[in-house]
Image 1 (cartoon, helix red, strand yellow):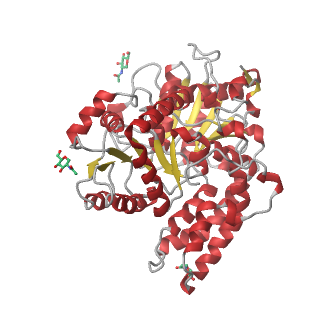
Image 2 (cartoon, helix red, strand yellow):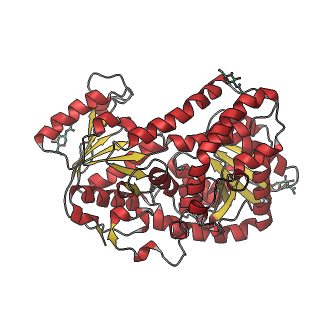
Image 3 (cartoon, rainbow, N blue to C red):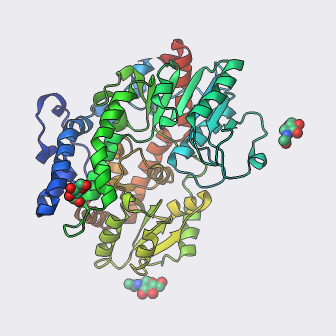
Length: 509
Ligand SMILES: *[C@@H]1O[C@H](CO)[C@@H](O)[C@H](O)[C@H]1NC(C)=O
Ligand SMILES: *[C@@H]1O[C@H](CO)[C@@H](O)[C@H](O)[C@H]1NC(C)=O
Ligand SMILES: *[C@@H]1O[C@H](CO)[C@@H](O)[C@H](O)[C@H]1NC(C)=O
């Protein structure tokens, strides 16, 4: 039951009362196995509140209409026509014209805390960069309002036409974000010729500033309701004898107020962009944002950086010393920290290699768990951080990509990168992953974020072997290139911005 996605009770939403034992999978099933100690009782109360609060949400999340989550269902969005604002599936599924120039050249203001320059940026910064570099290339006039970089600005200011114009904050420390200052600079630029659309990455522009701006859109890269589940999963991995850390305990206390707060202020933003189908549902169903103001546009990855390239995969394998007699090679990439689920994978893989001597794990990335992985011996190959071209080799060298994340916030780009490179994926069973990435059993495997469930999935993968996994990889590649390219994302954003500027563009096709 941990690895199938097809059977989804679509009737639960309206008819059934909350039944945690059958619907909230991971948290409750694991909890019942755990002995209850007095020390945990206050935690349990907290968790209970959280769970009670989240059940309605989870119920909603786990019951999306089949048409959203199953690309092969009869009502595919390819037959969609009408007002795009009423589309509840992700806009990446539609096809928008890429003709240059676009029908209207837009002047767009972007508020983002960071704008990447050279250094390896996080997901949110990469998103802004990929998106706006592309929209600028298409001829739109893009103004980025962001904090000063750590690098010397004079060396890096782009001097090409068709590049975003970056306004670094004046009188601020590198990396320091001051929205008031950014707003002043925006107003000055807006005075010259008014902006058609304003876009903020998360709360870079706070709600009290955004409130009175009708042509504003916000992209949410993770919301508080998602972090509630994240905390549940993380704490469930704590052993009974292990005390809860002070900081984690503290974070639990402020969590529900944070969700409530978000629900109250989110409505001040006019248009909402969710980066996963499940986040879109939460915004509509739990955050009570009118459906027509919620739009799902999934992030994209650069199709040139991540593609099928078996040759580079072979070379990479021999370079890093995967022996010829390896029967299966798993890969994991990203920051090697606790909340990305590395304790989980560490333990599960340690378990697995007791039984299978020809199975290898390749670890790309850096972080505290790098050292621990090295302790596992020769069946784990630890590589450290990789640049994009090395990453391409990495993805092509493996048979399957594992992402044991405990953070359901947003959506990890690594899953899309692996699929773009033609690899199947194994990932934690989260609504975001289930609703947008692993929408078909063919694409890979999902496990509950606990060691037993992961081991169970790993065993299935070992039993299948590389040939079957390669077949799955082909399907992944097809799906990913129809959904997760940077170009797809940029065209969807462009269309939304056009629709905000002029309603006639809201009608599709
Ligand atoms: C969390 O903190 C509260 C108050 O600060 C304390 O009463 C409680 O015992 C702590 N819970 C755990 C599980 O450490
Ligand atoms: C930017 O480009 C223009 C024309 O291409 C050139 O005249 C100008 O000197 C350049 N500025 C800098 C700072 O390189
Ligand atoms: C696999 O091959 C390596 C050398 O490439 C060898 O050292 C090792 O013993 C082999 N492992 C098994 C289990 O046959």
